[in-house]
View 1 (cartoon, rainbow, N blue to C red):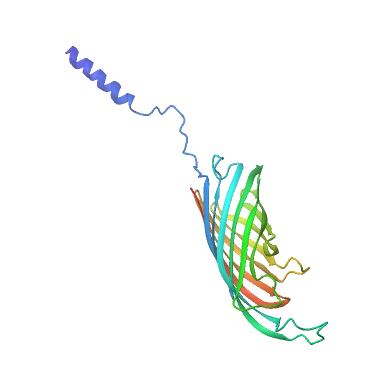
View 2: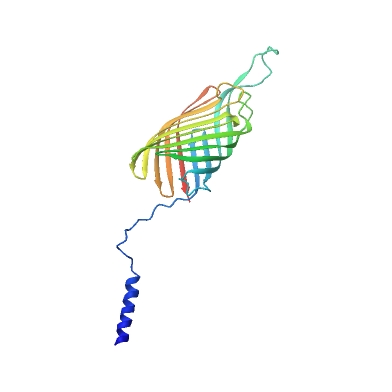
Length: 270
């Protein structure tokens, strides 16, 4: 009888001791973020398309959203076409005293770029700022020579970027991305303002400006301006964004016309 009571008591201790102690407060699992971030995307409009990809690393930070040093590498390939009044020959004017001959021609150009940057991310309350500096290589390969366009060929130089993200309130945010590279004097700027219709879904307007030119000229040889809207869906491990609107390009002071553009971008954190 004593043996039976001891056995029953032992079983009770084992069974009840293995149950969770419900008196302790329950804490839901916190989101876990990785320190690596990869993205890929596509951009297209009439006579222009680009595919790109890149990676950002935060090797000495707790995760990709924490303050600290950032390492970034990215690259892309695309093609574009344009029509311009181009010089047929450079043997004109003084001292040759011959009339310069121009001819409207259409050019097809393959465009590639690659860059390696190091930077730092810092949060100031609701503002997150990222600054990068590094090297960039940009190439414009023409199907035929354009004597009036000095952006042909490969160019390497220093690149700097500044990326700002500001949470206006729980349902709204705005961002501004700026960059400039001495390679082909290339610059870019993009502004967005997002409204969270859902905690994970944002919509809003966007503006973008891109340009490149020769270093020995005062005016940009090529630039493009865009105005449109975007949709952005985010989750714990990344985001997907789509954008579309109207763009206009100018090459060698000649308008290439207004076109509809579209972009798609996927970003993953791990």
